[in-house]
Image (tube, rainbow, N blue to C red; front, side, top):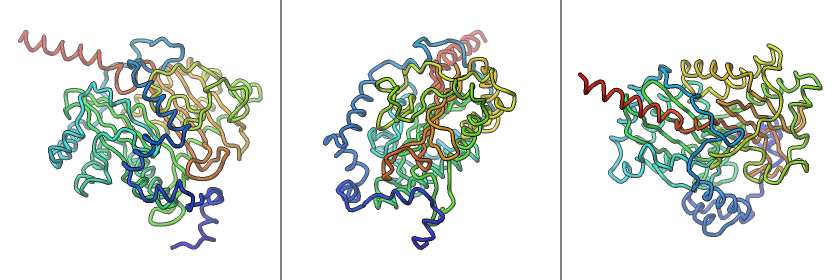
Length: 430
């Protein structure tokens, strides 16, 4: 075991904010499993601010899906059916192998209709608010391994490594607060929507604390949106996974871009000077999402454009925008990532970069890149488990949305239905 002095030297700032584990919040949590922990929250309503947000989420879920927009109007025909070279046969084989290991009850729990509204019930807090699917820390090692193998074959190698790192950091947090039954590296639920197929649409959802991936698959095409990735802290500084760190590249690239702007450009990009600015309208900041606009249950949010246009930036600055977007596409296989990135770049004439907070080397901050075909957000947060009352660089939330109905592959579905009908006609004519 690494001694405390060494941990402080390696781990840095976050260790100054370790919580008092003798307070009721943690002594209670340490005695509960994930289901007991969630039940107490849902029935007891504590903490009140988070419970109020949860109730608001349930009201938002009642709205028919529309998609995130910049002005309340969905722009059509932005997302074509296309070959993205994903290994769909291998993915179907992995999914079928997983299903073959499940009991009838587990198969029933994991399987949802392709059009189920349960697509939209992912959330990133540690509370198990929607206990669907199978939970990886509650199944046999063979089922757990098959589940991870499915995720591995869907994602790029570097994307899978990032997801695994997020899960391991969550396990590290569970160790820090002595509550491994609530937070561990397998405290994630997996759901399959539709029937795994090389020719029909289906999908996979993996969600839990600080990692939520919504994956829609159709033939050789993949839509991985929305997703959420976070970490508190974002570095493991001792134990078998020491040195694991995530989200620092997105942080460094965002800061580099903001610092590269001229003072006039910085003034245009910076929508608020303070992370919880008195100038913000009511609702622009909340305890859970803080500055994020497109988190859990925000499927229909109107997010007006803010900041500076990418097309107004220099070639070097536009390259930084591209590098940031590429980091957010890391989960995608290489061919799909390249196609998606080219699509994003084609919209630089309507791509906005906006910033909240300071932009000195040590300042925490928020930024967003937004266009008709993508929204990415980056935010430094105050403590949830750690005690820092102000946002800090060791607690990070990131997310990606596909606006104008693109999340969950929704914008593709009418085209898929038309394609299937056309094939049926052709077969009938034969």
